[in-house]
Length: 150
Image (cartoon, helix red, strand yellow):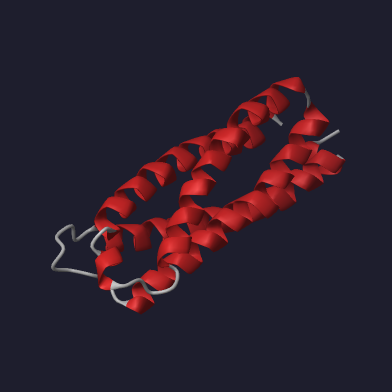
């Protein structure tokens, strides 16, 4: 029986579409991140619209991961066995730790901050960049599990 005729095959088809849309959103987030963080001196401070757009995209991306993509991956792994579940149990707490950094950044900057807070933006973007890099690595492990193990 081909995979596309199984319930899992149907799940993977849906998951792949969700994953692809989410990866496109991740690319947009990374572009916006590099635009904000590309100018490191304090003479350049982004405007309210730039920060607001970035924070919105950041939260949309994280939310889509948690509430759409990860759930589909969890479902696929539950159907197909112990290896995927073991990986999920390891990776999801690590991903959640990066979520805390994202939420803290959003809380600080989603409403346009005073200039004194913006002076910390370069440092905060650096911390956020590390969290995003870690998250991308962990998410790619999940995606790889979905696409190769199931």
